[in-house]
Amino acid sequence: MKKFVVSTNTSYDILIGKDIMKDAGKLIRKKLEPCRASIVTDMTVNSIYAQVLVTSLIEAGFQVSKIVFPSGEHSKNLTTYGNILEALADEGLTRTDVIIALGGGVVGDLSGFAAATYMRGIKYIQVPTTYIAAIDASVGGKTGINLLSGKNLAGAFWQPSMVICDYKTFDTLPSEKILDGAAEAIKHGVVSDERLIEKVLQGDYEYVIERCVSIKKSIVEADERDLGLRQLLNFGHTIGHGIEKLSSYSISHGHAVAKGMVAEARAAEAMDLTPKGVSKALSDILERAGFDLSIPFSPDDIYKFALLDKKISGDKISIVAPDSIGKCHLHKISVPELKKFIQLGLEP
Ligand SMILES: NC(=O)c1ccc[n+]([C@@H]2O[C@H](COP(=O)([O-])OP(=O)(O)OC[C@H]3O[C@@H](n4cnc5c(N)ncnc54)[C@H](O)[C@@H]3O)[C@@H](O)[C@H]2O)c1
Image (tube, rainbow, N blue to C red; front, top):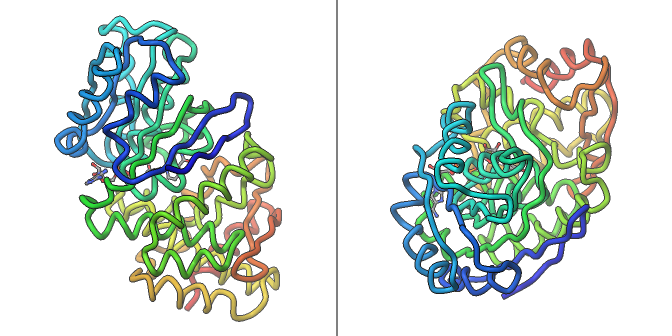
């Protein structure tokens, strides 16, 4: 088992290993006194993994309850969030108890936001079960939900107390969900480590999780609140979030980010912020991984959603421009220029 320590306003361990979920209770007990532990999960993950976690927590002395909601991005909304808060109150969870997020990025984002706001903040532990959650969503404390107007528009920065990542759970992931994780892992590679990309293409999960967590750890430690450096990890997301929302989430997060990365790199190239050839190199990598990079929406429609991007401050937005595969920089453009940026990205 590999351990990383993230030092933000609170410090926490990320434990990564194969088949470690059955030991979760013992691992958590080393950090927390026995208390009430409310597992929050979705229906799919509940049917496959909840029992192992429940048993392990009970054996370690925790008093366990469970909150289950329907699987998928459509649940990441105010209704599910409200239901989770009400269920926590019904269970009598107090400020010394803990929420355990068992599942993918949707479960982690919702549970983390509930933890950040229930009784003005209680502890939560991430137990990621998707590739995307293991390498990205479970680390760094960004929590939140979607509003009708767009992705992740309500949320909080709230760091977990621990992350327990058992990548044996990938055995049951559909191939489309493996690809979702590969997109975010390739993004980490484009932002800061070209060599990582080959490992993603080889499907070397152990290496990729450890390297992505290590990259994200350093970035989050330097910029916990997403005011500068951390925005590099938004590469592909300004256009990607628009694609996700316009498709009513039928194009999933990683697939939308893959399309968004190529479009944003192409636009940065057209604006002379990125050397010629980088967007082609990136699209070759993503096609090798198995992505369809077509974008079935107009620049105007994507622009409408991009206007609600959290990254806009005042009349400026930071875009991410690759210098090469393995290094990117931030560049501020005005909101009217964003329209042109999206058009350039979608031009054939
Ligand atoms: N907070 C962050 O920093 C951050 C970073 C990246 C992505 N995200 C968010 O994460 C979400 C996408 O993550 P996701 O794809 O993990 O979403 P998800 O939680 O919806 O999981 C995807 C699907 O896989 C199923 N599933 C989960 N684990 C499984 C397993 N081991 N075996 C079989 N099926 C399993 C789920 O039931 C769900 O249907 C998006 O909402 C995105 O915005 C957040």
